[in-house]
Image (cartoon, rainbow over the protein chains, first blue to last red):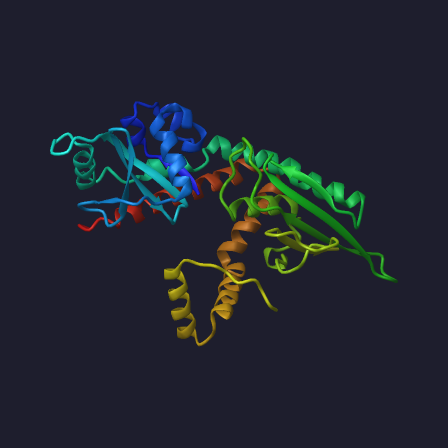
Length: 246
Length: 89
């Protein structure tokens, strides 16, 4: 579960969009007490105990209290994100009361996260480039390293985030000049914490495999059903893929 | 082969069981069909094999561009889904 502020919520708190919009709130809980309280409470539960009925949007917006400040949060299950939608002062009966302001935003169509907010969740083009460059170097190098010690698992970390095990089994066919290579790759799940931005699954697995698997092996030949060839087999949650080539 | 039970939200669980009845199979068989259909889908194969060729010739900018485009498409589709929650639409 991730915790994010919409750009409007950042603006409500006087926090710089440039500095914070493309970072999860858990990265900057020291920037404002409301951010800290938001992350602490919604980490315990992505929904609150009381909510505000929005005038237009059919979604439950939960109230968050901090002193006289009030905020609304929304659990976006599809994206796996709890959003802080807006913040302000609570003054019952006043037109400036935060709940009235946020309901007015809902009516105007600018309370809930918009396309720019969702783009902030994603990697930038520069981050995508950086990820791809690292994968292009580190993924084939790991397979190559495993070829030097057939039958032995070689472990490495790709792009600083992806814990990967590789085993190359070489099957020599009697009477034939050729040998069959069976390559096993196991991805640890979830990815490790780290500074590199990753595309979501399954895109990062697709990219790493595309950098590892030679073009002579088709996508249909990837086998996702095996158990990693180590004592004890696949680890909990490990994603294991195997392919064969001559 | 026996597998571990899969926990899904209740609404999804109900839909899956309804879909399984529609296809005359059980939920596990439906999951198997869905996965095999995804694995053999032109989209999965095409995406993988295109990236494979681009990596093999060092065309990294194209791989990055397509990852970025998928991100932008996802952001647009999520924003559209949020707009669809508006009762006036």
